[in-house]
Image (cartoon, rainbow, N blue to C red; front, side, top):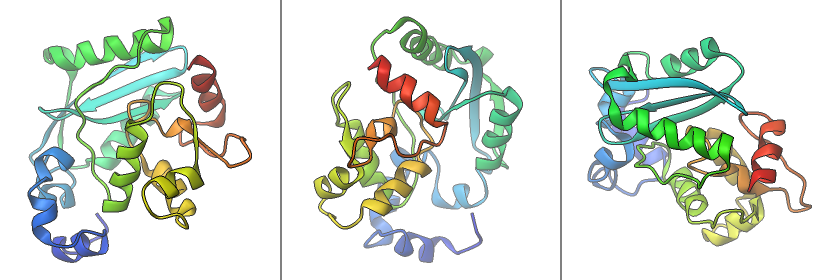
Length: 206
């Protein structure tokens, strides 16, 4: 996104070879690396926004899975965030996407009615390190909490707790990739991309 060529970006992101990313690009990116560099050029992304007890919720997805879940106080701000992430993608409302409407329904049920956390297909993207952190977070049990240092130790990089915090901050898929479960070593909440108040409410729910 910053203008670096794809090959250099692959290595600087921590992948050992270009094939390591390309063989997983459909699952991890939902598009080719070149399409992502171009802001989602020719990529069709459906989205839907609904109110909830935790503010407005935006879900966006490719044809295969969810690529973004954001929480916010303003529909306008959420749509701007979506356009910033995929500036050249074709963004369409979810009125013709039954899967996305269903995914939103079960997510709102989790938020408003204390239903189970839904397990939905995901399309995520990030550095090799970030993906390792996010995969660890998805493996946590409902209600389980862990420290930034605990995540770093669990992924085999015990000194990388600051990098773990940055990976949590870079997470584009709220709730489904549960970065809210990561706390400071002293038990305090730490940061949260969508606001400390929301993090506390989510943890209290769990």
